[in-house]
Length: 420
Ligand code: EPZ
Image (tube, rainbow, N blue to C red; front, side, top):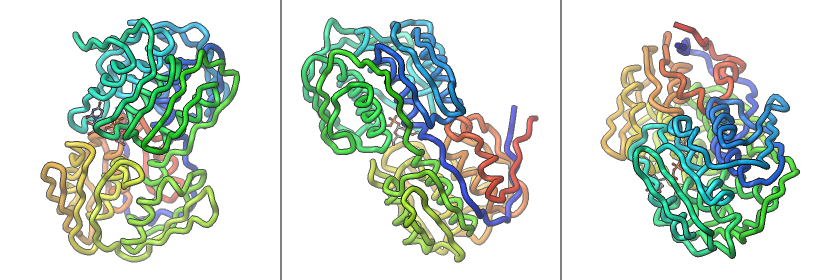
């Protein structure tokens, strides 16, 4: 077992290079199952979710190998729906993207009902609604989901909720369908655009990704034979932007897309921080005063991302005044506040809202990472706190952040990964 040990008190300063986006990579990898051929994917983050997905793709018959530090080469000429991966696919939610791809390619797909971060109920009704609208039958029983179809016919699908997963999964299922599929009220996250760009590079015909209407014109096959580079991770970039504010440091986040972080930039400026995006693919964030209170409401993109909610929670725990966060996406994403309260914060979480009474200081304590982004928030809190913080359950963090302690150490953090 491993834990992270952080001794706080040092403002974080310097440059950090952002990796490829986890939430794009865990969709692009299964999207490659649609290709009758070979492709190369670059800027892939070397994180445990990606390594797990490589094993899942291999269980479907794909050949996958690392051909560079962050580059994968895949041969998906011969793939089939296999029940060998049911155990593997239960381990995290993004495994459900294999359903859309294999349903499209093989007209049969089966995955174990996925697990993943415990953020509340994580239904898949909109995914299933989309598959059935395209002509598939979907059976959910005995811990697995089986989707099959004689053929898939393009149709119009309205998403009751702008779901990231359902938008991507339906897009995957529609790529090789007969005719045109329209997804209405589609989610608009940057990783959805990245999946569409990847598929179009490989021969698909998808238009409107990034808007709330996506049109997919079915094609015969995807031939691949091209390479694609994964988009920089908007959430990792935002994590370090908030680390700069929380520690009153000065960080330049390199290899990112400032347009993907406009809602966070606006909130940081509102709280009295400073942001410079004049260099195009980097963001400089610095703060040398106590942040002022704020009200944050998480929303689908381009609203404030739920995946940055715990991280801004650390800033609000130390802000001047009383702040509020309304979490509109997940029922249970305030578990981290109990850990911050153990460090001296004064947070009252109730359902989908939390009230933060700003305190002057946090104090080091043993804390537990309840999910990926909560874990990142606890690292930021440890960097700010007086004394030593020990963070347990860091396997959650390793799912989505590559070399996290090395990146923080390069910014001046006193942080070590310790086996115990
Ligand atoms: C993706 O999850 C991300 N995961 C999550 O990031 C992120 O928090 C979420 O999008 C919102 O941005 C990946 O991309 C792998 P949703 P997803 O479908 O697709 C409800 C992280 O930290 N819903 O957009 O599962 C659902 O309950 C992770 O990187 C239905 O009701 O999220 C939720 O309330 C955590 N029925 C809302 O929609 C459905 O069929 C948004 O969920 C699907 C979703």
